[in-house]
Length: 91
Image 1 (tube, helix red, strand yellow):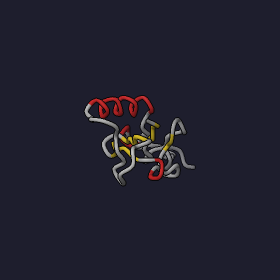
Image 2 (cartoon, one colour):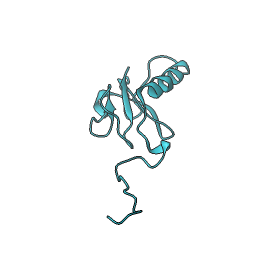
Image 3 (tube, one colour):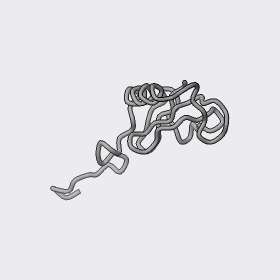
Image 4 (tube, helix red, strand yellow):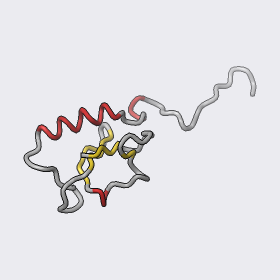
């Protein structure tokens, strides 16, 4: 590679907004949402009680049941988070 050329990692986040959400941030968001919730949270996609809280800063903050959480699209219970993939915390 010629001198002066920069190598760009295509998998690296381009900004803090692109970074994967932290479990601590998800826990804080969950605490705030639960404080404003009356009763047990319900899944936003069906009438079941929620089993998980999906969180991705600025885009996702919702409750889902076990049938509507996908380990392919969410980092479930401490699994390594990745950019663009929300954290799913068990309730």
